Image (tube, rainbow, N blue to C red; front, side):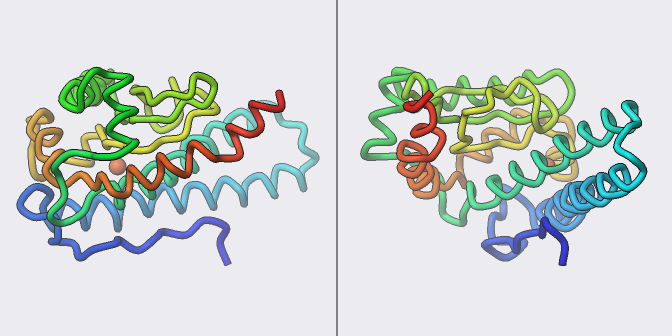
Length: 211
Ligand SMILES: [Fe+2]
């Protein structure tokens, strides 16, 4: 049994229409996300071979480390991405999540603007993310390159927007702004709030308190 497995979508392919088309969701999940799962499992298998061969080839080790980080992070971010959306989503967060967003950004609209800008202005491929930063005890926006670069190790992603071309090009072509605007109509704030509650009491916060 492989270590990493592709999670089922939490809805039908067409459930996010018209904001996210059935064919775009199908390709993105069944082909692209699946490829990161396969890549992560392949990297683990290659590490077994590397060790069997004496664990001494530094060039091979560097390549495997890159492949593992890239594919595991890709799998994680996509696994967070699908439940970040839902049919009849959108609206605004409330409760403690909204209070934390207002404290950090001034307003929910400003968060949307900053997170949208972080996603559309990536050089190359990457993600925009709202994260919990446990040292400051605040929510922040991160611009993640590829799947794993420009990301602080302790940060926990609460909401992720896929800015890779494969995420939107079939439906929106080069109109990335339209994809980001559409995302806000299907965002699942309830799931983000649940992650926020979990993040604040997480192991990484506890470990930092003991550092
Ligand atoms: Fe993607």
